[in-house]
Length: 290
Image (cartoon, rainbow, N blue to C red):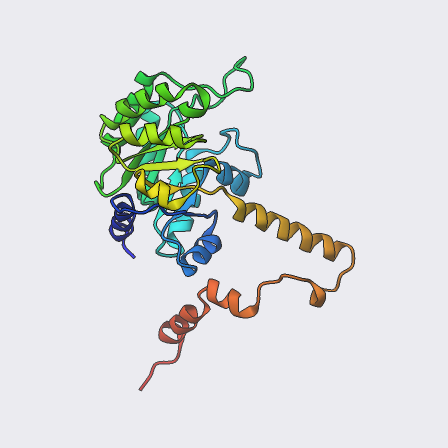
């Protein structure tokens, strides 16, 4: 599938009337699983990228090159539109431009740029902090200016609801919307009162992450203009648990034939697209046909 088609499908989600839950994906196989199960969208998070590529916690240690390469591997594996968490754009506004260029080339459908002060500075303490509204606006403007394909969606993200105040989040949303971003991402919305206030103010499609239980109703979310609501990144955690349990069982002497919860040969053939490779091998490597 061409990049344009994926981006059109992602924009149709933003322009639709319902809220969807994306699949949290982290590599080609997880993306194919999501696609085969009928998910409309994949989400590749910065925290999961750090774990997948580096085996490190979410401390902004992964580089743009490492992140973009993994995003490209995910995109290459199938036709699932991919939204990626580009964190703070890996630096200042000029770094944001480079981030957009690299991720657009990787084939993603959309990316988020946030206003969190990253990486954590010396003496900053454990609490996350936000950059100024003015610097955030500069990053959003840079992201919009850097894209070559107007189909690529730029999503402005703020954690102000959780870190400062709802009023600050609304002020930032107004400022970011004026830069030409295509949607706004709010992290940390815990109550319906908060979302009601955001929906009344925000004219762009809304993306949410880390929502409270009171908010997490798809009909309600859809009615409030929320088009994407993240559910977390449990698939990666489940994969880690499965690998750990399997290796532990083998280490403790369980025969391979008696291991539990092993993917079937049929599922592995499906996810590796074995039938496609068999056909290509016959077409391109087989003996010439008369």
